[in-house]
Image (cartoon, rainbow, N blue to C red; front, side, top):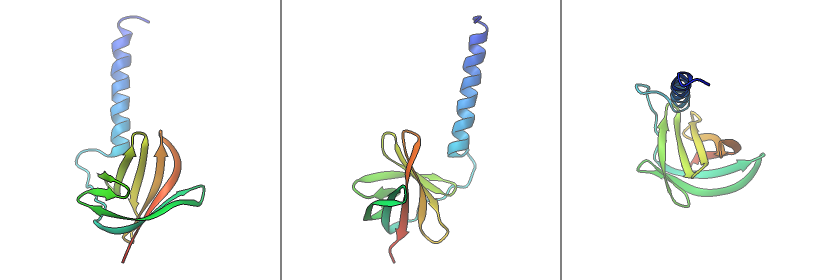
Length: 118
């Protein structure tokens, strides 16, 4: 590989990463939604089986379950990094709740549902 080709590969890779990140997390200028504050029942699912169900809340931009986890806004709700490599996505269900996939190391391992307590 020539020395001249290496900068082109690095530049192409950087552009691909930037486009991928913008696609995944949205771009500047888009409208962002927030996960509404309040009390919820959090249900964690995997393969159709309830793994954990507990009371939780959204308070001050954080999801409060076992600990406090910052919610990062997205156009249709948000996402939470529970610990490195474990992310849950919260997509508005249009009825005051949120549901979405749970990832471990980038692989879908289950789902989460936040159901408002009324």
